[in-house]
Length: 375
Image 1 (cartoon, rainbow, N blue to C red):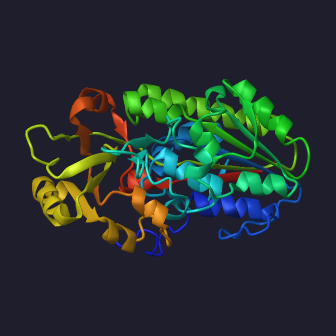
Image 2: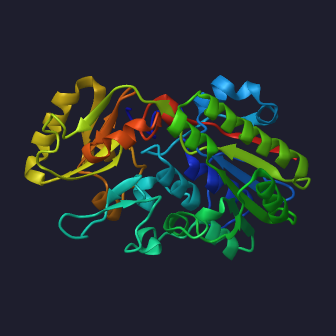
Image 3: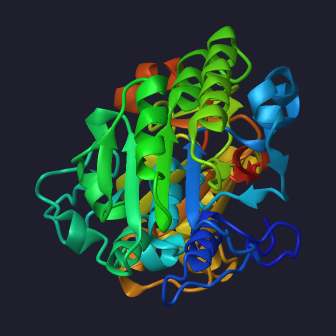
């Protein structure tokens, strides 16, 4: 894990990708870190396939002709945690998690009472204002203000969620519940120059969670991805440039620990958040060292236990971490190694029933592809 964003191997995330794509559309203040060339027609299409990590592309990609038509670039690296809410907020804002503050699937809502509440970023909470929670202007908002036609094409149920309003606001939302609707929405969005379309498909992620990475359902979801690509290649206007990436990869769970059942891991912990691959522990400062030692002694080499300052120094949340983000990040961060998951006692059956997981820092979870083509 040494220097998560500093090791010189894979250094770019969705934050750099989205900034770079919008920089080619000449959006003020964006940085083209990836060195992308300008698109002559100024029509950009960014597709995000949830859960489609490099391991999926490497193991199964050559089975699908549409995927094979795209040109592969150097992989990107998922945010930390390698989870949808955090990654998509980096895509939407062009910022790392320490700056945008969407630091996990679930996280503490500071000053929300005793005990404090947690916010599930994808299900949201009507008591939390999305724009206050994530106040930075999105790249969609900035592009719209600069005269770019920005369209978000995804399932209709995501149109007005708290998460969409926090992380991806500023576009014209085109609800699409089928491949044909997605292709039609993208084609309409990209009919004219100076346009950008963002497409989101989550079938691979859902199949991995329910049936596992590499399962028949997983392969059927990849077939749907391939259909989407082939239909886009045949129906989008000439001159459109297509980018395809993901938010994280997937692993199948092996061993599990039920936190608090038959162990004293929750002693002195007033709140636990995160998800089974990464847990945030909120504790009293005086007990922090003891809690860290207790978790590390119990888990041994099955997990990495960091205090907040160590995680920030390692660059897990990016080069800058705001005071707001610090309040939401756990006092301790427990990162499961290998295929371990850390489940909640009251939700153990539900969380263990999920076969595929993500959130941690294994290569399978953090290496994500970048594919492209110019029509």
